Length: 369
Image (cartoon, rainbow, N blue to C red):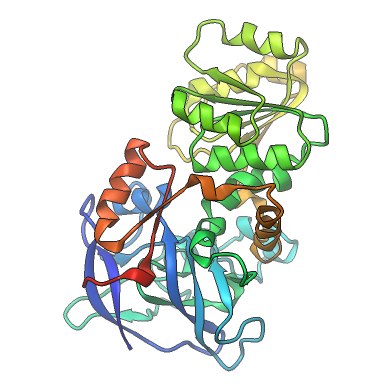
C-alpha cells in the first residue's frame, strides 16, 4: 500500500516527507495506522549519525496507533486494537528468556540495523533503497509494520495520541526508578536532568512512595515543573555549595541517584551525594569517559548501575503506566506538546533547544507529502 513517511536521507539533514510502498504484515507482524509518534533524543542522534543507523531511513520509535491488519500467527492483538510500539528484542536469547528484554543479546542489530533480523525491509521506494525497522517500528509515517513481540495493547479509553512516548523515553525514566532502582517507601532519590526522562523518573518516584525527591538541573523553568510533578526539593548543579545543600536535606546522604545527562562531573556529584551502600543509576547516553575515586566507591560500598529502557518488560509495564495515569498518579501528559507533521523539523529543533520537553507528531493529521 502507498503511505507517507518522514525520511532521513543524510547526516544532519532535515526530515523530508515522501511517498513509499509498505508491504503487508508477515505471519508474526502487525500493520499499524500511526496516530502519533514522539520525537526522542535517540531519533535525533541517529539522524545526526551519533548512533550508527544506515541512511536513508525512516526513524521514529515512540509510535502509537490502531491495528490495521495482522499476520496469521499473531494472537495478542487484532484489527481495531489501540497499541503502543516499544523497542525490539528477540524473545529467544538468555536475557530475554530471563525477563530482561532490554538487555537482549540482539538489541543493537534489531533496533539500529535498519531492517528485519534477516535484512529485509517492509518500506520501499522505486528509485532508492529505504531502511526501516528502526527499533523494529519506524513510526515516522502514516502506517508501519512491527513484529508482534514489541506491540503492546493499551486501554482504548485513554487518548491514543498521548501514549507513544510510553514506548521509550517515559518508560525509560519511570522504569529506571520502579524496575531498576526499586526504592522502598520513605526512600530518598536524587535525579539529575529534568527532560522527559528525568521528569518521568520524578513522577515514578512520587508514585512509589519516595519521600525525598531532589530534582537537579540548570533550567529554572524545568525545576519549577519538577516541583509540580512530585519533587520535594530542587538544586542547581552549578551551585558551589551543592554538597552542603545535600547535607542540609539529609546529613547521611541520599539513598539513590539517577543520572540522565551522561556527564562525568554530574555523575561524580551523584556519587558523592550518596549515603553508604547507595546506588547510582546511569541512563544518560554519552560517549564521554567517566572517572571516579575507586577508593571512595569501595569504602562506601557504592553501586553504579547502567540502565537500558528502564529495565522494562513493555507488555507489562506500559499498561501499568497507563493505569497510573488514569488514577492521576502519573501526569506525563504535562510533558507533551503536539505538532502537526508540517512542523516536524521545528519540533525537533524545539526538543534540542529545550523549548519542548516531549514533542509528539500527530501523523493522523498528515495533510502533506
